[in-house]
Amino acid sequence: MYTSYFGLKENPFNLTPDPRYLFLSYQHREALNHLIYGINERKGFVLITGGIGTGKTTISRAFLSVLDKSVDSALIFNSAVSDMELLQTINREFGVKPERGRPTKKRLISALNAFLLKDFAAGRNAVLLIDEAQNLPLSVLEQIRMLSNLETNREKLLQIALLGQPELQKLLDLPSLRQLNERITVRYDLRPLNSDQVSQYIKHRLIIAAGNNGILRFPDGVCKIIHNYAEGIPRRINAICDRALLIAYTMGISSIDKNIIRQAVDDIGGNYLKGRHRKRGFLLAILLALAILVSAGIIFRNDILNFL
Image (cartoon, rainbow, N blue to C red; front, side):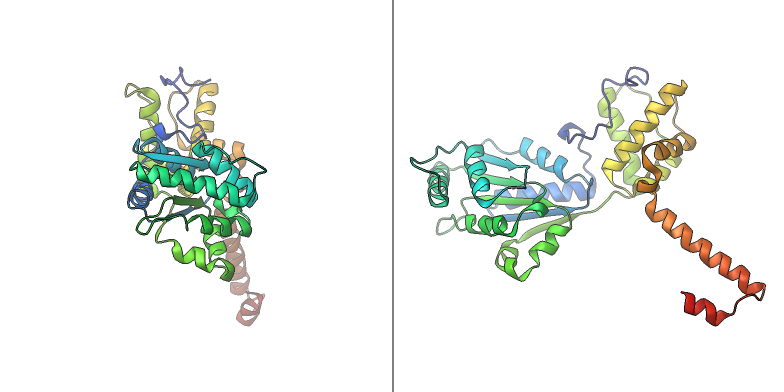
């Protein structure tokens, strides 16, 4: 709606994980490098964790787009599957033809193993990428561990990358998953962007959307406010910027200021974005009120300590 108004070819702040818009901050570059290293060196397992909206899915798509042609890939984005469904999906993604007869775990794994051995003999590699892995049932995670046993005397036949929210690490810390956890030797925890990175992130997306010809800019002061509201999380940044551009368009304004950002935040849900800040403000208000009461001699210091 507002793209042509601002001289843009397309919406720069879509929430879809488009690899073209991947902003390689230090954190995102490290996450991508960990994936590439783990796969190329046949480490067996790679674990990438990060909060909601930090860019894990975008990194996974970018990773798949830069894979060497000698690498076959299988992407699992629906992690609400049984162990049997997982095996069937993996084989389908790799194009493995099922063995004759009723599908069983043994037959599915046997067919997968034959495919991987053939791949390895041809000098190829295979990677299984599982997104939202924190939703996997324990039985499926155990099945994934068993898949890591598909190997030669020297090399892992299947490289497995698990991407998920921080709860995934807590899940892996369970005693029942200790064997799986100990096999993961390549790990990276993706952190939110800092204030300077948020400014660079917004500029990067605007340049991509405008084809280097756009004149739209978000001032540094505006970017700092966006960082405070979004807490450095790319998905939230996109939501705020998208709504801010829409507001500016409807108002006939060609620049983005702090007031527009605040209105954008209120429109999309100020409580969601500013929950941490409001909680902090509420506590400060309580402390200020107590200080006033103390100075007025209404309550005593011991009462305050008991209250806190």
